[in-house]
Image (cartoon, rainbow, N blue to C red; front, top):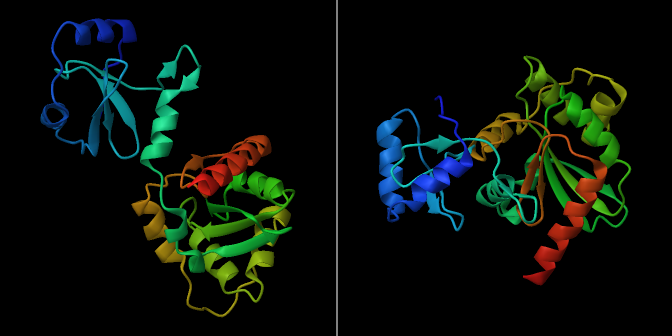
Length: 239
């Protein structure tokens, strides 16, 4: 689908000229004009636009769906990335409901802070993340082998899972460039993890999921991970 890009000021002027339509009407109109698109939900915002959630993307439109805007919307006063914050909320999951039995468990220190991560054994950014993860303290990480990048990702993930020491085999692959030794096939969750990731709309690795259910896709700094761990723990404790 090709979206029409335009200036935000022009769209706001267009929206201001008429009465608000209902979100159901906007949803129907978007799907009518773009029949190849499935709209998950439409939300009327406080800043004069309709937010259209497409499952893996947010676009913005006016009440008549005469214009669509892609890209990140920034709050000029706070410099907050509104689009990113909304995506985090819309894609949030219930952390406790994740199937942790399908993950490789890593514990550092008292393991009090929790994190789940979907990683591909061939992912270069995951290798960098693993180095940061191993330098953190007081953390429990549930590593879901998520084979999506290369033809042999599935074979590597299965071999790692079937190894006598899964965590060591995983870290040998990602930290030491040491491929897993072929082992006897065993029951493994690799296909289940792929199905789970697709259901959760995880399109890249690493994807980090925190205790409050919100996620960060892609490679981020250790400092940002630490900050999100603190924030997530505080949110969970406040409930």
